[in-house]
Length: 485
Image (tube, rainbow, N blue to C red):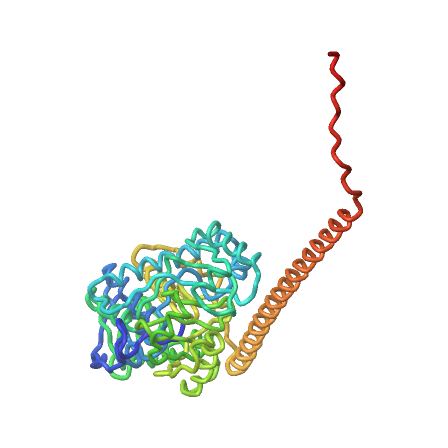
């Protein structure tokens, strides 16, 4: 899940980030079937699905609902994961990768159905997603379309460079892949709606209730909070980098990543003149991810760091990227900036499944999108209530230590190298395109000159031939023979 904002002031479907009244803390002992630790998108999805399946559910949140990355997400709902398709296939094989991909399509339908519920207000759904390439590699486009459309069964359309540039007025992009069934929603509104749905289904949610210790022994696990104890048959660790005491083992498998994001001030009529696509746009190298919100603003994310930096310091990155990609917009004003830490796994895939009898995990959703949090909730809930074992599709992606501080340093270095490499590759592709254009113009001019020379030569030869011919002799008509008379 991208750590990006969706709330904005003065925009349809986007609300100001006003604080809501805190919900009750857990201050009495409680017995339930399932205890979910973490009330983010994944935790609330698990709670909702489990409660709908008839389980008694308690959700423990150490802070406030949506205080972390779940409250600041771009709201992108599309198929796939945060790893390249080729890497996923190389890891688990084509059939296994296709089954994993199908789960995200199911997750998309779950989110779409929830967004239509009356509990979801102001989700501001917009359709379509466009993945654009920074380099001119048509062979890659064909290969990806084959994999996505044929092998994985996704609805995709290949867009030629001219079509991409018709809706995005910039020479930074070449061909693209359009996902017509993908969509975007206001992530904060969706999170609050998810909370309402879970409560309506019977889940009990407690805020400002940190877990300080867990006793995993016995059939009934014991969970200790500052003011109460809770017993449950099953526990789901649905937190991210802030899990801490409940399970340091899970928290230490996540690399914290902060991504700069900003919401521009209203751009007026300038915006539709340069961006004619209503859905989200992302480049294949992960440098920029943006979309129009509220009709005349840009929500733009660019730049990552494994060490926390004040969002205001990252505004310059976003402003510079907007001006670089769309210089026609000029210097844009930033209304608000955001940054929240997401947990990224070493292998790049989410961690979903049963770690040991009665202990489950739903974590590592950084860069994954909303569909994966939705399907995680369904897989775990049905694993508990219906013995559904589809969660085992994620078994190849074990808990891998992220390397601590050294891992963060290495991760930052890898990201910067990849980003600079992507920018350099894009610059080279554009240079080659301009060089090819200059060559075509030069060749066209040379062809025109050659044709003009040939025409002049032909004209001269025609004139010389005309001068060399003798004058035409006078016409002599045959004289008829004298008459016999």
